[in-house]
Image (cartoon, rainbow, N blue to C red; front, top):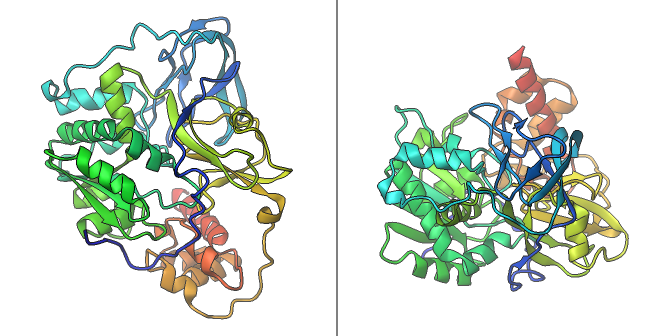
Length: 437
């Protein structure tokens, strides 16, 4: 099998050995879960329960606040202790706090769905919308929105992201090994919903076992599995599409502009499981790892579980933690507390030791051009960063700052340790804020 790829990119240490061969383990849940009503890109949900209400697993507790939004369901059965504002990974948001009765009684609405082949695309998308399914690779974009392109942008290909190019993370790898049939079913449902015949699953070459298992599971279907060169950010949407289809998304464009929809393998698994069991998105798999964790694991947890509970399930901290990230080390977001709830898009909990967490001191740019050579979008990161530091956001915009996918390759490769990604993020925020005015 020839390996596919894209121009640019980097080769950070994989750091996956501690968990890549560990089977997924289930963590039923803590005594109390705190379920945020904003776990997705878009409008927050409106609470449909109040303090004192009894709830069951899969029961709707937050109704979507708009088209770009996603329902939220209870991940445990028990009693609502409070509906309150508190800190989450997304900010200060409303959470439904539930005391877990540890019975895990399913709501009456949790029933297997009809054979997807008997349903229309609109009916399938409605079921996915009601179940609150979002992109589970990290972004948290509501899946039903991706599946609703305008009529003038027909879709002919669905690509599943099985690259898992972020160092440390192995949850998607394990899911492909342990639940390949459910992933294939989820992709077939997506293909039926959009009436497409071309399904592609891209998997990096450092997961040969997953390529083999998924290829076998896709036999006798319209789905093909392709091997991708092991290179970061191979799993980024634009790079994945180019590698799998040889199509390039234009500047400022979306995958639907070139007839493609991209989803994560975990999203496809959740859709397959939804039709099989009727269970909405109340659980997911994440990798809890890093030198700051005693016993790294791939864990299936219930949404709203405090990060500290997941860490304790891994036998706690290995020494004093230096930094906690949600996601991987390249695009993950540092957290100020381990009391925050894990959410639908929590693909990893990465704990660095204090030594690992120390940031190197930035020095003057040496004009080596490495940031330009590795940029997968063909930008000039040093120019955007320089104009940002001068507060000249118009010039930064002319260098296409908004096209940056924030992969962090430029910061990783920079010998001067310049904060390139961080300054480009500032530029993007300022440019967008000015355009809104």
